[in-house]
Image 1 (cartoon, rainbow, N blue to C red):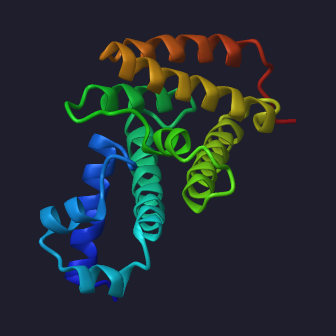
Image 2: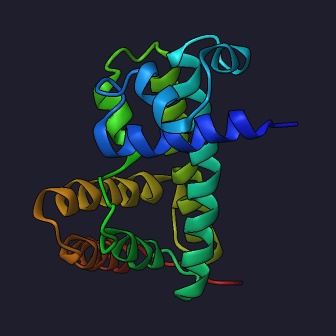
Length: 187
C-alpha cells in the first residue's frame, strides 16, 4: 500500500522532472518541495534512479489511460490520437514528452529509465496498432510505428513552436498515409 510520503515524492518528482529535467533536479530539491525527510525517501526508493523509474512507470499508465480516454472522446479512430495530442499541446504546462525527454537525458539505452521510456513508446505503438486493427486498416503492425513517428515529431515540433499546429499537420499526413493503404473488407 503506497504511503502518503511515497505519493508526495512521486508527485513532486514527476512535476519537477517534467518542468526542469531529470538531471537538473536533485534529491535535496525533491525533499524540500515534497516536505519528506531523507530517511523516508530512502525507505521508499534506493536512489534517485529508482525514483525516476517509479515516476516513469506511473506516468506511463496515467498517460496511456488519458490517451485512450481522449481518443474515445474524439471518435475512437486512429487519427483521433492527433486530436488528443492537440489538446495536450494547448496546456500551459506542456514540456514535450516525458519519455522522449528521458531518453535524451539518459542516453544509455541500458539504463532502467531509458528502458522504461522505450517500453512506453512500444506500448503506445501497440495501442495505435489496436486502433488501426479495429478500424480495419491493412498491415496495422507496419502502419502503427509510422503513426507513432508522426506523433513524436508533432510533440517535438509543438514544444519548439509552442503551437498546436503540428498535431493538425501530423493528422493530415497520417490521413494521407491511411488513405494510401487499402482497408480490410469483411468477406
